[in-house]
Structures are given as C-alpha cells and as structure tokens.
Image 1 (spheres, protein in one colour):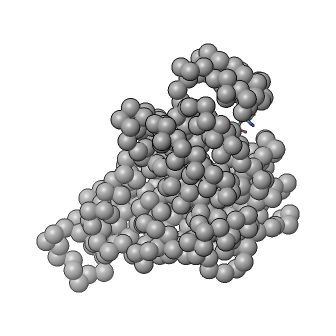
Image 2: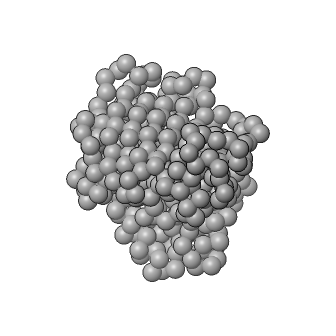
Length: 340
Ligand SMILES: NC(=O)c1ccc[n+]([C@@H]2O[C@H](COP(=O)([O-])OP(=O)(O)OC[C@H]3O[C@@H](n4cnc5c(N)ncnc54)[C@H](O)[C@@H]3O)[C@@H](O)[C@H]2O)c1
C-alpha cells in the first residue's frame, strides 16, 4: 500500500493483509518488489494518470479507478502510456464496474441482438445524497483540480459510461448544471443533460447529490420492439415484443412482459463491492489470456470526453460536439459557480 497518509495506509494494510507499507508516491512505485504484478490506482482522481504512468513504467499491470483522470489532456497521456504498456505485454484498464452488472450486460446483449428494435433513446437519473460532511471530509473533494467536477464527474460518470456503452457513439451534448445545495465546493451538485448519439438516439441524464435521503439510479432504454428499466443496478422491468405480437396497433401492452424484478435492494450502489469483484476478475482474465480487458483506456477516454462535453456545454450554453472535445477544443473549460 502506497499512501502519503500513513494512517490511511495502515488502515488498508490491516484490511487487506498487505505485506508492504510505504510512505509515498512515485519513487515508492519504482521500489515495488518484482512479485507485485498489479497496481490499483485509488488516489484522488486528478493524479490518476501520473501514478498510472509510473506503475506502467515500473512494469505493473495497472487498473485505474474511475474517472481515468480529470483532464482530457492527461487522458491522452494515458493513451500513449497504454500503447507502451501493450507493447511490453502489460494490461491497463479503468474501473467502470457497472458494465459488469448482469442487468447492464443483458441490456447490451438485447440491444445488440436487435431485441428492442429501433432504440430511440434512454433516460438516466442519479438521485443521490452527499452531505456537506462528505464534501468537507477531504480537501480534494469538490475541487476542479483533483475531483475534476461534481456529481457528473464523480458519481455520474458511471451513468454516462453506461449510456455510451449501450447507445453507442455520443455525438452532441447540451447541458445545464448548478451548485444548489452544498457549500465550500467549486463544482456542480446538480445537472440536466441531453445527449444525441450517432444512431440518432436521444438520451436525457439528470444527476444530483442533493436528493435527500438518496433515492437511487435508474436507466430506462426504449425501443420500438421493447424497453427496459434498470433500477439500482438490477433489471426492474423488461418487455420485448413477441414475434407473434398482437399488439401492433396498440398503444401499450403488457401481455408479454417477460420480467419484473421483485424488489431491487439498496438505494446507493456506491458501497456495494460486487461490481468491483466482477471487474477485477475480468482484469485478471485479461492479464492471463493476454486479451483486452472488458474496459479499455479508449472506452474510458470516450466517457471522460462526454463528461467534458457536458461541462463545456453548461459553461457556454451551447451544443457541444463530442468529436470537438476529443480533438482538444474544450480542454479545461468548465462552469464557475457562486456559493448557493
Ligand atoms: N468505482 C467507484 O465506484 C468508486 C467509488 C469510490 C471512489 N472511487 C474513486 O477512487 C478514488 C479515491 O476516492 P476515495 O473516495 O477513496 O478517496 P479518499 O480521499 O477516501 O482516499 C484517497 C486516498 O488516496 C491517498 N493519496 C493522496 N495522494 C496520494 C498519492 N500521491 N499517492 C498515493 N495515495 C495518495 C489519500 O491519502 C487517501 O488515503 C477517486 O478517484 C474516486 O473517483 C471510485
């Protein structure tokens, strides 16, 4: 465990029965023993790429916590480091554990197989609660420099990533964001977004950490042959029109609904470890089989670019093309808020 906060390091060492303790940072990575094969970067978001590059240079397979970093310029540095890693036989991936939820996997398979028909769009909501104490608990939280944004970058990037994974290439974004219910932070706690996709699909995304006491996340995907809803990571509703459907002229139809979940558990999936377990298994599989990990650095760059497009759109009040963001036209542009 490498952490400049010795108490934090010791807590984690005790928890995972790790054998090494080191005070800090990039130099300590160089000194890691050879039998440490994998590095997991769990430090504040704004230093992910620095640490990942050091781990790759030290010959470690590297799994970076989300978001990959907070700036696209730095994400491009990781793309370059990832290319060097691949040449050296190393695997690099970025945490996006909700891609491994059985409900997300099933949704992707259904969409790919055309089971939902023409997918017109999606609506994604993240209605969570983060107290003022949460933001006050560490200096980096709620700062543009190290958190890289508020509810969209920190919590909502999961929802953005799922939208992109399920609906395909994002093309354009419009957005409004605000700092409405928290103090002493620089970033948004609420956002409303519209994303259009290469396929023509249109999605909305509403995210807030000002929803007391914390309701949950919901993703609804709608197509002209079927629709689904994922509530707190579990499939709560799935309806696919049967081949011999008699509802062609109707306005609804529930006769062939094939799934309604019993009772999805837990409002805030942040504390569940099951997604991480699934992704760590995938990461080990990728290392052993020398095949790509389920989440590539390119995947994470596209999700980060979509988040950056949201900030650029909110700051300018205009539509922002994700391709322009990827090209570097909007690096470091974000809204500025006064205290609520
Ligand atoms: N995938 C998920 O669902 C998920 C959930 C929570 C957090 N995260 C991500 O994990 C990261 C950490 O978040 P957190 O809530 O655990 O933060 P935290 O503040 O609780 O922990 C961060 C730790 O990093 C240490 N640190 C600071 N600088 C360091 C350095 N240079 N080298 C090594 N360690 C350093 C700090 O001392 C602290 O112990 C963030 O990027 C966050 O986005 C992801």
